[in-house]
Length: 300
Image 1 (cartoon, rainbow, N blue to C red):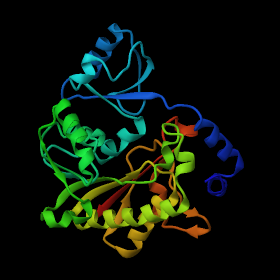
Image 2 (image 1 turned 90 degrees about the vertical axis):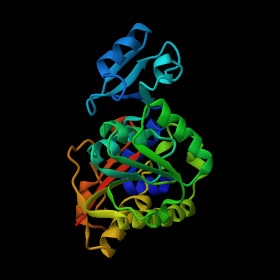
Image 3 (image 1 turned 135 degrees about the horizontal axis):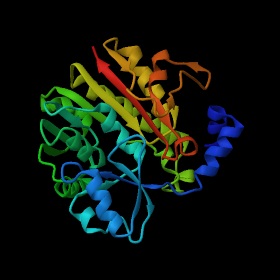
Image 4 (image 1 turned 180 degrees about the horizontal axis):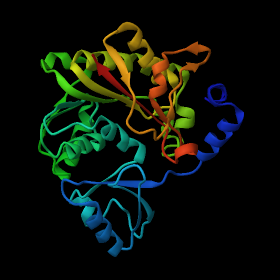
Protein backbone atom coordinates (compact mmCIF):
# COMPACT_ATOMS: atom_id res chain seq x y z
CA UNK A 1 0.00 0.00 0.00
CA UNK A 2 2.75 2.44 0.92
CA UNK A 3 4.54 1.86 -2.39
CA UNK A 4 1.35 2.83 -4.19
CA UNK A 5 0.94 5.92 -2.00
CA UNK A 6 4.49 7.02 -2.79
CA UNK A 7 3.64 6.79 -6.49
CA UNK A 8 0.39 8.69 -6.02
CA UNK A 9 1.46 11.41 -3.59
CA UNK A 10 5.24 11.52 -3.33
CA UNK A 11 7.22 11.04 -0.11
CA UNK A 12 6.25 14.19 1.80
CA UNK A 13 2.49 13.83 1.23
CA UNK A 14 2.61 10.11 1.94
CA UNK A 15 4.23 10.70 5.33
CA UNK A 16 1.56 13.28 6.21
CA UNK A 17 -1.18 10.91 5.03
CA UNK A 18 0.17 7.97 7.05
CA UNK A 19 0.69 10.09 10.17
CA UNK A 20 -2.87 11.43 10.03
CA UNK A 21 -4.24 7.93 9.61
CA UNK A 22 -2.88 7.18 13.08
CA UNK A 23 -5.28 9.74 14.59
CA UNK A 24 -8.98 8.97 15.13
CA UNK A 25 -11.38 10.98 12.96
CA UNK A 26 -13.58 13.64 14.55
CA UNK A 27 -17.18 12.71 15.29
CA UNK A 28 -19.83 14.39 13.17
CA UNK A 29 -23.62 14.39 13.35
CA UNK A 30 -26.10 15.30 10.63
CA UNK A 31 -29.25 16.96 11.95
CA UNK A 32 -32.42 15.32 10.62
CA UNK A 33 -34.35 18.39 9.48
CA UNK A 34 -37.43 16.22 8.90
CA UNK A 35 -37.83 16.22 12.69
CA UNK A 36 -35.96 19.20 14.14
CA UNK A 37 -34.08 22.29 13.04
CA UNK A 38 -30.32 22.53 13.69
CA UNK A 39 -30.55 25.42 16.13
CA UNK A 40 -33.02 23.59 18.37
CA UNK A 41 -30.99 20.37 18.38
CA UNK A 42 -27.79 22.25 19.17
CA UNK A 43 -29.53 23.94 22.10
CA UNK A 44 -30.87 20.63 23.46
CA UNK A 45 -27.49 18.90 23.26
CA UNK A 46 -25.67 21.88 24.74
CA UNK A 47 -27.90 21.66 27.82
CA UNK A 48 -26.70 18.04 28.20
CA UNK A 49 -23.06 19.18 28.14
CA UNK A 50 -22.20 18.57 24.49
CA UNK A 51 -20.11 21.10 22.59
CA UNK A 52 -20.87 21.26 18.86
CA UNK A 53 -19.20 23.20 16.05
CA UNK A 54 -21.14 23.93 12.87
CA UNK A 55 -19.61 22.71 9.62
CA UNK A 56 -18.46 25.24 7.05
CA UNK A 57 -19.79 22.88 4.35
CA UNK A 58 -23.30 22.00 5.52
CA UNK A 59 -25.50 24.10 7.84
CA UNK A 60 -27.05 21.00 9.41
CA UNK A 61 -23.77 19.20 10.17
CA UNK A 62 -21.96 19.55 13.51
CA UNK A 63 -18.58 18.37 14.76
CA UNK A 64 -18.80 16.92 18.26
CA UNK A 65 -16.07 18.69 20.23
CA UNK A 66 -17.11 17.67 23.75
CA UNK A 67 -19.00 14.50 24.58
CA UNK A 68 -20.01 14.00 28.24
CA UNK A 69 -21.74 10.75 27.26
CA UNK A 70 -21.92 8.72 24.08
CA UNK A 71 -23.47 10.78 21.29
CA UNK A 72 -25.23 7.61 20.17
CA UNK A 73 -27.05 7.06 23.45
CA UNK A 74 -29.06 10.26 23.88
CA UNK A 75 -32.85 10.45 23.72
CA UNK A 76 -32.43 12.79 20.75
CA UNK A 77 -30.50 10.13 18.85
CA UNK A 78 -33.08 7.46 19.61
CA UNK A 79 -35.84 9.83 18.46
CA UNK A 80 -34.10 10.22 15.11
CA UNK A 81 -33.10 13.86 15.48
CA UNK A 82 -29.64 13.17 14.05
CA UNK A 83 -27.43 10.61 12.34
CA UNK A 84 -23.79 9.96 13.29
CA UNK A 85 -21.87 10.26 10.03
CA UNK A 86 -18.49 11.45 8.81
CA UNK A 87 -18.76 14.81 7.08
CA UNK A 88 -17.36 13.36 3.81
CA UNK A 89 -20.13 10.76 3.79
CA UNK A 90 -22.71 13.54 3.89
CA UNK A 91 -21.49 15.01 0.61
CA UNK A 92 -22.88 12.46 -1.92
CA UNK A 93 -26.53 13.20 -1.08
CA UNK A 94 -25.74 16.91 -0.76
CA UNK A 95 -24.16 17.09 -4.22
CA UNK A 96 -26.82 14.91 -5.86
CA UNK A 97 -29.45 17.22 -4.35
CA UNK A 98 -32.69 15.52 -5.50
CA UNK A 99 -35.97 17.42 -5.40
CA UNK A 100 -39.33 16.43 -3.98
CA UNK A 101 -40.66 15.12 -7.31
CA UNK A 102 -37.79 12.83 -8.25
CA UNK A 103 -37.59 9.06 -8.43
CA UNK A 104 -34.29 8.37 -6.72
CA UNK A 105 -32.45 5.05 -6.32
CA UNK A 106 -29.81 4.32 -3.70
CA UNK A 107 -28.02 1.27 -5.11
CA UNK A 108 -26.18 0.30 -1.89
CA UNK A 109 -28.40 1.75 0.80
CA UNK A 110 -27.61 -0.05 4.06
CA UNK A 111 -27.21 0.94 6.82
CA UNK A 112 -29.03 4.11 5.75
CA UNK A 113 -26.82 7.15 6.29
CA UNK A 114 -27.04 8.42 2.74
CA UNK A 115 -30.56 7.05 2.23
CA UNK A 116 -31.99 9.02 5.15
CA UNK A 117 -30.06 12.08 3.97
CA UNK A 118 -31.65 11.78 0.51
CA UNK A 119 -35.11 11.59 2.12
CA UNK A 120 -34.28 14.66 4.20
CA UNK A 121 -33.29 16.68 1.13
CA UNK A 122 -36.42 15.45 -0.70
CA UNK A 123 -38.55 16.60 2.27
CA UNK A 124 -39.96 13.07 2.53
CA UNK A 125 -41.63 13.47 -0.88
CA UNK A 126 -41.01 11.88 -4.27
CA UNK A 127 -39.99 8.23 -4.45
CA UNK A 128 -36.90 6.69 -2.90
CA UNK A 129 -35.92 3.13 -3.85
CA UNK A 130 -33.40 1.67 -1.41
CA UNK A 131 -31.52 -1.44 -2.52
CA UNK A 132 -29.02 -3.62 -0.72
CA UNK A 133 -27.93 -7.14 -1.62
CA UNK A 134 -26.77 -8.15 1.86
CA UNK A 135 -29.75 -9.56 3.74
CA UNK A 136 -27.93 -9.16 7.07
CA UNK A 137 -27.67 -5.40 6.54
CA UNK A 138 -31.37 -4.86 5.82
CA UNK A 139 -32.49 -4.77 9.50
CA UNK A 140 -30.13 -1.85 10.22
CA UNK A 141 -31.50 -0.02 7.19
CA UNK A 142 -35.08 -0.58 8.35
CA UNK A 143 -34.28 0.64 11.85
CA UNK A 144 -32.66 3.84 10.60
CA UNK A 145 -35.45 4.54 8.13
CA UNK A 146 -38.01 4.26 10.94
CA UNK A 147 -35.90 6.12 13.49
CA UNK A 148 -35.36 9.06 11.13
CA UNK A 149 -39.05 9.22 10.17
CA UNK A 150 -38.61 8.44 6.47
CA UNK A 151 -41.78 7.39 4.68
CA UNK A 152 -41.14 8.09 0.97
CA UNK A 153 -39.10 4.92 0.48
CA UNK A 154 -39.26 1.24 -0.33
CA UNK A 155 -36.54 -1.25 0.64
CA UNK A 156 -35.50 -4.04 -1.73
CA UNK A 157 -33.15 -6.87 -0.79
CA UNK A 158 -31.54 -7.59 -4.17
CA UNK A 159 -28.32 -7.19 -6.15
CA UNK A 160 -28.26 -3.76 -7.78
CA UNK A 161 -26.55 -5.19 -10.85
CA UNK A 162 -30.03 -6.56 -11.68
CA UNK A 163 -31.74 -3.21 -11.22
CA UNK A 164 -33.02 -3.16 -14.82
CA UNK A 165 -35.37 -6.02 -13.94
CA UNK A 166 -37.41 -3.58 -11.85
CA UNK A 167 -38.49 -1.83 -15.05
CA UNK A 168 -37.98 1.65 -13.60
CA UNK A 169 -36.06 4.65 -14.87
CA UNK A 170 -34.65 6.97 -12.26
CA UNK A 171 -34.24 10.73 -12.27
CA UNK A 172 -31.27 10.36 -9.96
CA UNK A 173 -29.14 7.50 -8.66
CA UNK A 174 -26.69 7.37 -5.79
CA UNK A 175 -24.08 4.65 -6.08
CA UNK A 176 -21.91 4.71 -2.98
CA UNK A 177 -20.14 1.68 -4.33
CA UNK A 178 -18.87 -1.23 -2.26
CA UNK A 179 -15.11 -0.83 -2.04
CA UNK A 180 -11.97 -1.92 -0.23
CA UNK A 181 -12.35 0.98 2.20
CA UNK A 182 -8.78 2.24 1.90
CA UNK A 183 -10.05 5.58 3.14
CA UNK A 184 -11.30 4.14 6.43
CA UNK A 185 -7.96 3.40 8.08
CA UNK A 186 -8.58 6.13 10.68
CA UNK A 187 -11.74 4.30 11.75
CA UNK A 188 -10.40 0.77 11.30
CA UNK A 189 -6.59 0.39 11.53
CA UNK A 190 -6.80 -3.28 10.51
CA UNK A 191 -7.38 -2.10 6.94
CA UNK A 192 -3.68 -1.24 6.76
CA UNK A 193 -2.94 -4.94 6.36
CA UNK A 194 -6.21 -6.61 5.42
CA UNK A 195 -6.42 -5.54 1.75
CA UNK A 196 -4.16 -6.49 -1.14
CA UNK A 197 -3.94 -5.23 -4.70
CA UNK A 198 -5.90 -8.30 -5.80
CA UNK A 199 -8.78 -7.14 -3.58
CA UNK A 200 -8.75 -3.72 -5.26
CA UNK A 201 -8.78 -5.22 -8.75
CA UNK A 202 -11.56 -7.64 -7.84
CA UNK A 203 -13.64 -4.86 -6.33
CA UNK A 204 -13.16 -2.70 -9.43
CA UNK A 205 -14.93 -5.35 -11.52
CA UNK A 206 -17.93 -5.23 -9.19
CA UNK A 207 -17.93 -1.43 -9.30
CA UNK A 208 -17.89 -1.38 -13.12
CA UNK A 209 -20.85 -3.76 -13.26
CA UNK A 210 -22.85 -1.75 -10.74
CA UNK A 211 -22.11 1.55 -12.45
CA UNK A 212 -23.10 0.13 -15.83
CA UNK A 213 -26.40 -1.16 -14.44
CA UNK A 214 -27.08 2.17 -12.79
CA UNK A 215 -26.46 4.13 -15.98
CA UNK A 216 -28.75 1.78 -17.92
CA UNK A 217 -31.51 2.59 -15.41
CA UNK A 218 -31.02 6.35 -15.57
CA UNK A 219 -33.42 8.58 -17.49
CA UNK A 220 -32.10 10.85 -20.21
CA UNK A 221 -30.70 13.97 -18.53
CA UNK A 222 -30.65 12.04 -15.27
CA UNK A 223 -27.80 12.25 -12.77
CA UNK A 224 -25.79 9.49 -11.10
CA UNK A 225 -23.41 10.24 -8.28
CA UNK A 226 -20.60 7.72 -7.84
CA UNK A 227 -18.68 7.67 -4.58
CA UNK A 228 -16.41 5.40 -2.57
CA UNK A 229 -14.57 5.49 0.74
CA UNK A 230 -11.44 4.35 -1.11
CA UNK A 231 -8.54 6.47 -2.30
CA UNK A 232 -7.44 3.87 -4.88
CA UNK A 233 -7.62 5.25 -8.45
CA UNK A 234 -8.43 1.70 -9.58
CA UNK A 235 -11.75 2.00 -7.73
CA UNK A 236 -12.43 5.59 -8.71
CA UNK A 237 -10.95 7.44 -11.69
CA UNK A 238 -10.22 4.26 -13.62
CA UNK A 239 -13.85 3.15 -13.23
CA UNK A 240 -15.21 6.46 -14.50
CA UNK A 241 -12.62 6.67 -17.29
CA UNK A 242 -13.66 3.23 -18.53
CA UNK A 243 -17.32 4.30 -18.66
CA UNK A 244 -16.53 7.50 -20.54
CA UNK A 245 -14.61 5.51 -23.15
CA UNK A 246 -17.49 3.12 -23.75
CA UNK A 247 -20.50 5.43 -23.39
CA UNK A 248 -20.60 8.64 -25.38
CA UNK A 249 -23.93 9.52 -23.75
CA UNK A 250 -22.28 9.96 -20.33
CA UNK A 251 -20.41 13.05 -19.20
CA UNK A 252 -18.95 14.33 -15.94
CA UNK A 253 -20.72 17.29 -14.35
CA UNK A 254 -18.65 19.67 -12.16
CA UNK A 255 -19.79 19.69 -8.55
CA UNK A 256 -21.30 22.97 -7.38
CA UNK A 257 -18.68 23.53 -4.68
CA UNK A 258 -14.95 22.77 -4.70
CA UNK A 259 -14.65 21.33 -1.22
CA UNK A 260 -12.07 18.64 -1.98
CA UNK A 261 -9.20 18.47 -4.45
CA UNK A 262 -9.47 17.51 -8.11
CA UNK A 263 -9.46 13.87 -9.17
CA UNK A 264 -6.52 12.42 -11.05
CA UNK A 265 -6.27 12.98 -14.80
CA UNK A 266 -2.90 11.24 -14.95
CA UNK A 267 -1.90 8.42 -12.64
CA UNK A 268 0.52 5.48 -12.74
CA UNK A 269 1.70 6.80 -16.12
CA UNK A 270 -1.82 6.65 -17.59
CA UNK A 271 -3.53 9.67 -19.12
CA UNK A 272 -7.22 9.74 -18.16
CA UNK A 273 -10.19 11.80 -19.32
CA UNK A 274 -9.49 15.46 -18.62
CA UNK A 275 -12.98 15.94 -17.19
CA UNK A 276 -11.98 13.80 -14.22
CA UNK A 277 -10.56 17.04 -12.82
CA UNK A 278 -14.21 17.78 -11.95
CA UNK A 279 -14.38 14.82 -9.58
CA UNK A 280 -13.28 15.46 -6.00
CA UNK A 281 -11.06 13.63 -3.54
CA UNK A 282 -10.93 14.00 0.23
CA UNK A 283 -8.02 13.02 2.45
CA UNK A 284 -7.50 12.78 6.22
CA UNK A 285 -4.42 15.02 6.23
CA UNK A 286 -5.97 17.68 4.01
CA UNK A 287 -9.62 17.77 5.08
CA UNK A 288 -9.64 15.92 8.43
CA UNK A 289 -12.13 13.43 7.02
CA UNK A 290 -12.00 9.81 5.96
CA UNK A 291 -10.54 9.19 2.51
CA UNK A 292 -13.31 9.70 -0.03
CA UNK A 293 -14.04 10.11 -3.76
CA UNK A 294 -17.04 11.73 -5.49
CA UNK A 295 -17.94 12.07 -9.16
CA UNK A 296 -21.23 13.29 -10.67
CA UNK A 297 -22.30 11.85 -14.03
CA UNK A 298 -25.06 12.91 -16.42
CA UNK A 299 -26.79 10.90 -19.15
CA UNK A 300 -27.27 13.11 -22.20
